[in-house]
Length: 632
Image (cartoon, rainbow, N blue to C red; front, side):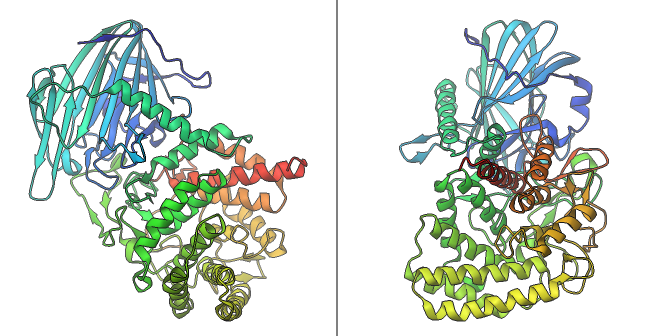
């Protein structure tokens, strides 16, 4: 039943042990920061610091959950593995530069290592897509009792599945309803107690060097005969895949460990069959505990994903950038009249939002939402983001054929010119009144600026001349109507005096230099009005049409680091960046927001936007420091 091994797993010296109490872990929601993720470039699972998988949607990021204790601790379902003690010590970390998660436990009776991974590697040029989670339990000293609890709850916990046992092979769980069909198989030689429908419980006793592997496979499996799940082989292949990927990074700067961890997290958020990048793998983690600002982020925002390309490129990962651009081209080619700001990861366009009233939500923050109504919002920045991504790809080795120019670039510009003077919903997707957001108008300038550059590359001089004139007209309007001389800052929208941290992107897209007096004063006023406690920057402080409040947006703080870097204020930028790094959790992951009153993470997790912002800020600051020191 158990296999014996001689090797042990040593944790990094920087990890810290924590004491957990069983009663609290089982009956109280964990902090968002208490989670890590494992994934296979199709979906991922959130694993708590206590060894419990509390969130797993399969077979895709946006599929219904089969474990959902993250959003309802009583109903949601979980897959728990932990010592059967009233309290125990734990530390959790990733194995080297991989996405293999190691959770270590210590009790008075012994110690235990839990290794979690989803097979992720290539055979030839094809990705292995096994749809499995492997959980290796290994006793490293003494004798230890381990409780394993398997409680799948299909279709967002609306169905408790039937469990069927196959001696010596494992269990199947099936939920077949008119709405959805989901099946799981648990491959194990162990026989569990079936306490109730769809719930398995087992106490395992392991002695030093003994181990047992549990494999959860989506879609069920043939159970007529014993299967070898090849855990050892898949673990080794997955380890090598991630190490090779991480070692491709062209970065060896001051924050190498943190930057590569963020890159590994971003890579996990790619849906490999299409190249789409999800904003986050979760839904409805609140921006305010008890509030209603709970959104589904398991989709691909064109803006967010294009920004991620900046981060990947800064590290030398061209394959991911070109793969994503190929996907965008396939979606929007000959479809400029049908643009939208976000898509499903398979290219789906209808992302209708609905609530799940049977779930109480994370720490009773309801409603729990699936789908996102922002999909059909009018946001002007989409034109600039798309054209910037095309230009960026072209500049760094991609090709824009003449037919792409004629059937995508030119139509995008023509469509934008019909729309650019309309109010929109802006980057922050306000659900109130549309406005003439300065950020949105800036991206209209970007659209024309990049189109001009592409036209010049393609020797389309007539278009370049006409678009240059219109580009300069938009720039003049933004400066005349979007910059308020009385307060010395670019403002959120025409005619207002409200500030917006999104304007900190102006230097990064080359609208104005960071040393321009208007940008300098915008930076300084943002620090004075939007920044709290020396590092937390709010998106804005104006009304947005929704009740309640939100935390400070971490991406905004990283934008500020970039502005300070580009303005030559390197010491200030470095101090801010170092303070922000401390906001990542025990495995180096960032959330969307931070609650200033508690210091705890808020919003969907881990957040691609935040990790992208960190990578971009850190690599740019490293380059600036090197230039100042004369090293490059």
